[in-house]
Length: 375
Image (tube, rainbow, N blue to C red; front, side, top):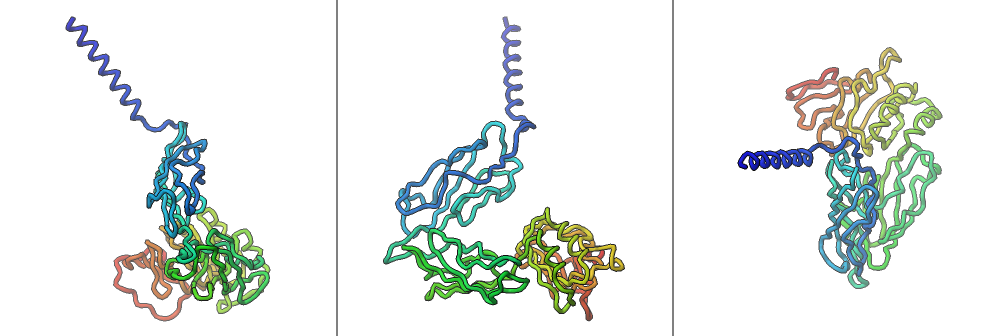
């Protein structure tokens, strides 16, 4: 009898152990990474509205919503944010989801960590009253000048305002130069431009922004951008130039387009170019990115470049052979690289990463610990 009980106990323990191992196993290899970015059923708060507590389920996930502040109904002149927690459906996983992958209609900012289904959506301020209007806080977007395209004369309307735009110079279509947009807003009922914080209000794509709240006028300075698909044909159609009359080219590209850009820059002869990538999302610049076997192994086209915040690595000799290059400038917000007088260093300036091949004059190497290969 004791043996029977003992054996039964062993069987039960073994069964529990197997069940636990099964429960803790790695996700099934057939599970798919969630790829529906747009979260449905969550919209910008409106005065008097009832906060939703669940998203509209998708084929891949369900989700809950928690609001802060927790007003019900939504109040006047209040900026709300929603914390959305997703639960994958069977066959789907969050492992592999990129940081800031998800989107929410009407939000000013949406963020999530890598491999996470917890999303924070920050919404514009709700409307105020006639006597106490709310300050406008929805960014202006959609009017960035694009080389070869017709200038927009109205801005994209929002729940807070409408508006029109005039341009100086008044080229039509846009060319490769700087433009100033004078934007005159018409606030909707319950909103005002008074009280806007110039340091936080955004005009997407603009280099600089100034605000005259008294006249509901915003002045934004842009550098016209060009599509990577149009770059080669645009440069080919332009007259040959010199380093002092270089074409200022601003591109907003991702990592997948970088090699296409590199090939174009290396193979367009007699066109000197200053390359502004400050609005791009590339994460790396490969080794020998702009080195070419032509022109006696030298790239004469590139005279300057602005490296975006997103770049985390630059390969050895990325700018080797660029004999006209006088400035390699890292965007101020880059966490990995910095520049001083056109010379590229790591962020803490302990490593000299790259010295421009066309930069003339004397150079005193600062107190650094390392010099990268092919500097």
